[in-house]
Image (tube, rainbow, N blue to C red; front, side):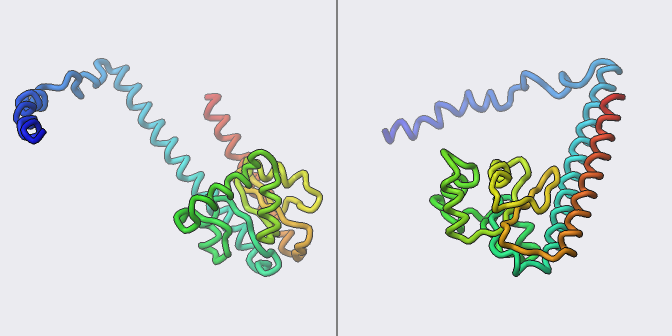
Length: 212
């Protein structure tokens, strides 16, 4: 075995060196368009990709700004709100505005058993019992999740919970035991309507570009 390990590099050195210094089967020149039409299509493709990625970045920024506005509107009511149950991705927004979180992206702090328990609960694996037990155990009185998540569908069916705010990205539910001021509720309604109008304008712009 020692002899084989010694000789192996010497045996493989020549063919590896030959392959390393050989010309690649496909070169960059082969990939370059041969006609002006091909070049134009390539330029259009990369421009489209650039604007698409820029739009994604801008959308993410706008979404972050929107949820921060909502959380700032709720800030005076932080004590009344009580304990939050939030999704994995929104913990950073809560931390940034000095809200206590249920969970955040530092998964290593929570451990695998808790993470498994958490995701099974919010995703309603098998039934809603784990979620109900989690809400009761941690005295959860409000939630912050992405709008498409299953927990929102479940809470919508519960008489003791009602929707406090919702846009295309985030939705907040609140327990009926929590009483917020009329001023805060009015602010949230305004933010919700503005988010809806912005989304409609964005969808109209996208449809206009697509039709052209």
